[in-house]
Length: 227
Ligand SMILES: Nc1ccn([C@@H]2O[C@H](COP(=O)(O)OP(=O)(O)OP(=O)(O)O)[C@@H](O)[C@H]2O)c(=O)n1
Ligand SMILES: C[C@](O)(CO)[C@H](O)COP(=O)(O)O
Image 1 (cartoon, rainbow, N blue to C red):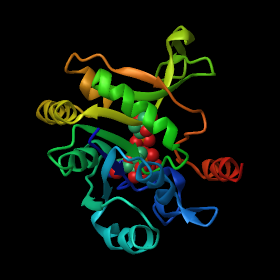
Image 2: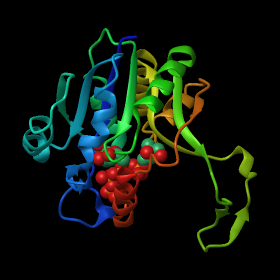
Image 3: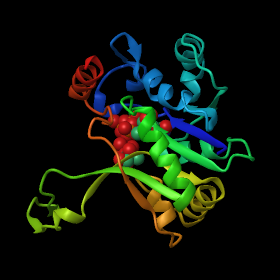
């Protein structure tokens, strides 16, 4: 398989409330982004890693992540956009044209494991579009603007979706282009493929693959890493 990884790290980390972008905060002495890249660097099918970073942090990322740690794969830094979706679009359109499959991952998910990525890549080869996910453990409610419950979806159909999300290259580029044309902004990449009428397969991931979003997530991530 000829695959590329696109790791998005161009956010601002506002919910983390730190002066430094959360992907550069450290867990057990290394930046969050280092761990998010490592699982992809170890997979033979992945031929390159495109890391999407903000213009202001390009040099910082090059010096403090790319050059500082040893990676086997070529790492290309490209500029991000004002929304995650625009950052992803810039990443996927900067992958090599001969790659068949693209795995899109949040730089803020450092606990992703190599075996889980491989499982997603294999499924994407068969189904063209997949997302990692885990069955939700809580009861989920749909709530109105005044905090009154509108309805309670049946939990057996609810999954919390993670990254990586893995797609055939042509399909995901087409899905992003259509979203751009329509002015549609999604919170993940599978929704853009769903809009094209394609079936997306959910592959069971790992509850530990959390997204570092608020300060307590760093404590949880460090605890998992130490285990
Ligand atoms: N314009 C953006 C926004 C987000 N991301 C990336 O998308 C991932 C998931 O987004 P999120 O957790 O929302 O990160 P931030 O946008 O940085 O966080 P916040 O919403 O709290 O500002 C992160 O790795 C983030 O760096 C990005 O590349 N470009
Ligand atoms: C793509 C994602 O990680 C799937 O759970 C998530 O939707 C990103 O959302 P955010 O609003 O950028 O945190």
